[in-house]
Image 1 (cartoon, rainbow, N blue to C red):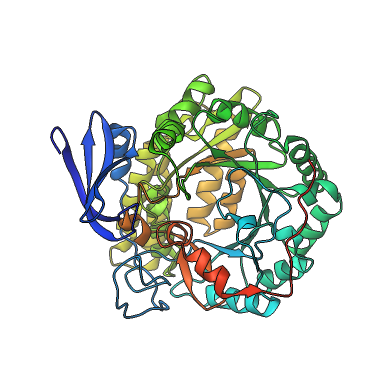
Image 2 (image 1 turned 60 degrees about the vertical axis):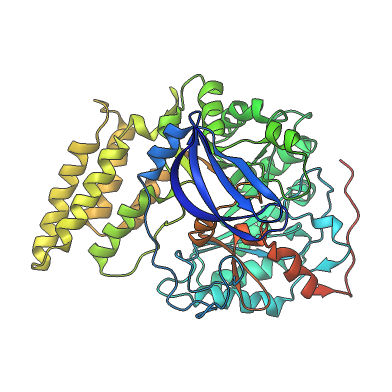
Length: 502
């Protein structure tokens, strides 16, 4: 490994035989690679992050999770990732649960994470099985799962989807999401209203570009967006970004979302994950890491959004810890691995898209929150805690104001923060989301950049009919539990649907 500087030691897998092997995260030529050797298949060195400087900045936001108090596998007999679901080695609770409602699909996309149509059989859990999965998720301790996303396949193909949404709401899920290709939402103007009335919070629309070349179903997507807009059902666009295919349209997708802020609440870019056989040269050409994506965002938005505006998912852990200390109740903690994703907020104003970093100094804001949490942790009367909160708001404003702006938006932002801290009204933070466009990315792993430490900190879990919760990146890569789950629960009474003509 000449010329390489070891940053971290972890475990990975051989991309050929999937055997767990020791690995090293190394810095070389201002990039980060994951390197390991398999006794049978030799040495592998694959790109992990394309920008070492950004890697180190994100590494400062590492937080250790506490895991579940009631894991399904309390005494795993094999090492990760061979004992999924969820085992006692796992360090994060479920922030978002995915439930595959079916593997039936009415499209045959060139890239499909689930390989839904090629299985040769139908997977579709019964209503009762979905009920059991939802119950399992809400039984998690110390916190029940707050959000569930119904996925597939194409979940809108299920006629009982509205009933399943109502079931999830009755069980207490704060967020019920649908991940869809949008075909039926476009065809049936009433479907959006039916889903909204049932309790769907957000529609996650697979949306790969703003041109017909990058998005073969663009016309249907636009109609689906209009149908949701007409009845006030919020959407998040989910583009899969592939180098040399649609990475040149990232900026245009952000502008499109901003122009439709009344219905589009955010974008969640997903750099391509290679789940099948791939030539190394072709993979290297198409590989997009998080730093690549963020740099394209900066370049293609003319600097309106910069790489420095983005932060890793666990940056908000200090806020959770503050709320936990203030309320004396356990809170959901966003302890995903710091290199799994990145996000920011852009506020859509008459002047254009303004990143949250123009409103506050984010780094100082989180430091101030942490200091306030430490103050509340000191022993003393409850009245002193209230005064600490009041004082803390002043400290937050002083430490975190990044500009001399005095416009109404800035006042409303700080009003929301104040209400949350002083009056114990955390619902007031919802005001902060109004006209705010979430711009995020999650880079799910494949067999070439697989880091078992990332697996152990995963916060997105799949619920399965056999009573297990499986991390996203073992469900879809590595061991690929998806194939085992689907095959073990295949249905002989159902058939695949016809492909829609676009």
